[in-house]
Image 1 (cartoon, one colour):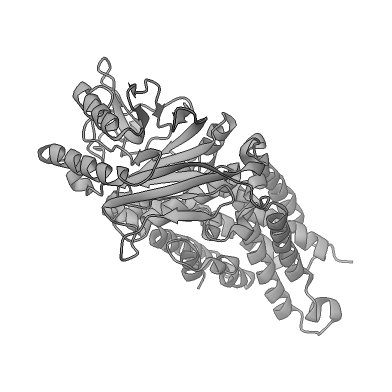
Image 2 (cartoon, rainbow, N blue to C red):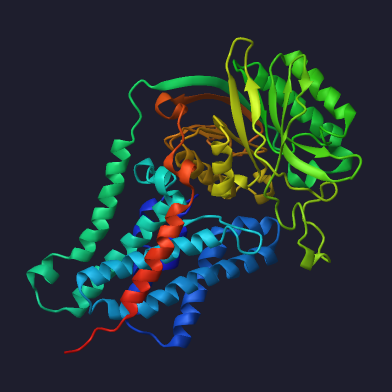
Length: 510
């Protein structure tokens, strides 16, 4: 039951409420004190199956990688559940105050483990529990203060409170007023939920404060990944991109967006490619903000990033280089040098070292907007978006290519992370995908526009426009999370140490 509810809470499934009770069945089972062997089999098995179902779209690239990565992530979950097994059975015998501290400690431990996934091995903070609420702005607003980890904390705490309430009902048979019909454990969880709702209403933008920025036209060439880098189809792929761009440019817009690695040859290091794109921009009379590649002719190293080409002036020399490279896709970790890279693109990629904001001007008399770029899966890493916001980004731009992962929901699951980054930093997010998900999210975490075809699918060849705006309340200021970062992770670590120390301490008998 826990595995099913956990999986259904994560996009593309539309059942976010399942996250509030997903772990209750397992936590109640833990309170029954199963043997160590059975417990670890169930804990690791539940985590493994759940993560495999969540990441099943990754199999289109590698079955072995999907299986191995799911197993690694299962260890994080099993570690947390193992701590709950150590604490929960004894916690019911303690006073409510001690129980509350213990429950906060377990929720804090979950946050610490989620955060550690950003840094363990090569980093994979994909699908935190907070991702389940990507379509629920009411719950998400605490992310502007505590980051998405605050949302995960709330969900885990609620699970723990519900489980503890049921366990108390089972353990205490008498119908007492305090521990009978009234459960302080349940009301602790409801109080945390009520606090999140209070934060939502207190952070609503001022009515009529929306300030129009520009209209962005998105191009989705939707070239299959197995054909995108086929040397015999390079010219054909380029013609598809140009044809779709001319179609989208006919719509009223100020700037055109291209997805990740849009052209078949690098725009930096290939003069013919640069001239062809510049000619297209001059023809259309609109700038193109694109995901593309750069090749250093001296060193042979490559960079995956975002670039701006303007009418008349051409390619802007300064560009953004991706900071977080994909293991086995854009580089092979040193211990695995014998393994060939999965993505057959160019030579060895070099990571960028700065946020490199791009200055976008959509008209001669219009203000300059500073674009913070996130390429491929960089919007999954909270610290990357935060660094760009700290540097003064007005809008985030995500250029990606999810066509590698089929049409089973991987693109939507990826896009949900952009909602978290929007709320955390109070900045709009524009997304351009090779075949979808393309759209934009406002700084309150509401998905404003999603490009779909006539059948309602995000996976199609074509394009559309996004009318991007921002709220004046947040335009000239940074969120608490942007200014102070992952302070809540530190607080969660302290709560975990204190809560586990007190919760594990046996009650003294008179």
